[in-house]
Amino acid sequence: MSPAKSNEKNTSASVSHPVTMEDHKNLNRTHIVKKTTAVSDALGFPDGDQFEQDLTEILQSDAEASGEIVVIALCDSDHFDHINKDFGCAEGDRVLIETGRHIRASVPGDARVYRIGGDEFGIIFRGSLEREDIFLLLNEMKNSLRVSTPDGERQSITVGMATAFQDASRTPELIRKADSAVFRAKVAGGNRVAMAREEKMVPKTSHYTQDQLQRLARAAKQEGVGEAILLREALDMLLKKYDV
Image 1 (cartoon, rainbow, N blue to C red):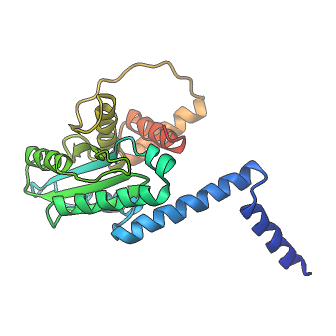
Image 2: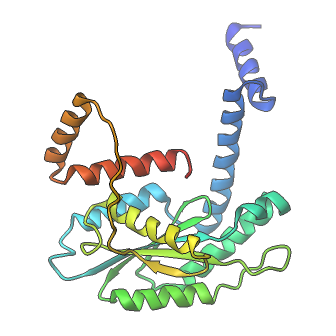
């Protein structure tokens, strides 16, 4: 047997029968990709990367100068983990697909709907619809969801929304504001719509090296934003990495 075939066989075996921690991680990534593809293929929504790209293009356009209202919403399924755990991934996929279709049918045709990943969907509203009207629309969307879990319970969603140029003018900050609204609503019990709000900064002692602070200052100057904004963006990336 050639070395190439031997290596291929060993790689295949390690994936099929995970032995090391890295094998388990690789197998888990494969399962996640398959699951994400199954739901995304059924819905045909753009993904999270496209969501960020489209939002960035809008924020860098003349939308603010022309007086357009730009609002994003993040829709997160409540208590979704137990569906996959208790009833299997096929039922989890069904719930996500039905939820995604309901979201698409509940918003105006010019609103863009995305599959962010996992059990989260994103929406970009752009036009003349006022923020308060969008809030009412999202609330009705939440209230009219009629997706049942296998045990007969009604699936609910929690929505966080943020308004461009008012809550933030950069993509990471705007998404963070909407995500914070989701988190706040989840803590309050979920199954509700929450708007982004002015945040109270909480002092926290931190220690950075001199090199880090100098590089941070250069990055802030280069991007034309405050150092605190970049630090918050970095912390968001860290929290997302560890799924917190």
